[in-house]
Image (cartoon, rainbow, N blue to C red; front, side, top):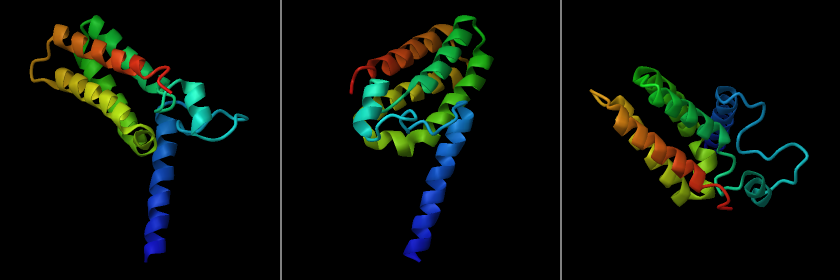
Amino acid sequence: MRHLQNIIRHVAIVSSIFLLSIATGCSKPADKPNAGAPSGSASTQTQSGSKLGDLSEFRSIAADVSGLVDKNDLPGAKARIKDLETAWDSAEAGIKPRAASDWHVVDKAIDKALDALRASNPQQLDCKARMDELLKAFDSMKNKA
């Protein structure tokens, strides 16, 4: 029974990584080093500049959302940030164990941006402030290896 549970857990993890790679347009799982690079967390950190690994796909989505907020397209920003939420949640199991405190910094910033955009009457200035904080959170992870 335990062996079957381990297989199911493994399949769920692999499926999550696969779905993340599809959602982010990546041809390989986000938590894997580049092809031909030495394996191990040190090489992943060196390549990405972050203990959490390569966050560029997540930051790219956040930058898209920020651009929509700047244009005062709050419904569009609300729809696009759902992509970030889904990708981030799907990648949690692979990212969070690398540096849980760093993961929580970014996760909290994502939650604040989600709250601002999902407010019953979202305000552009508040949404912009939360998106600026989110982009700063992503940027603060660079060179933190």
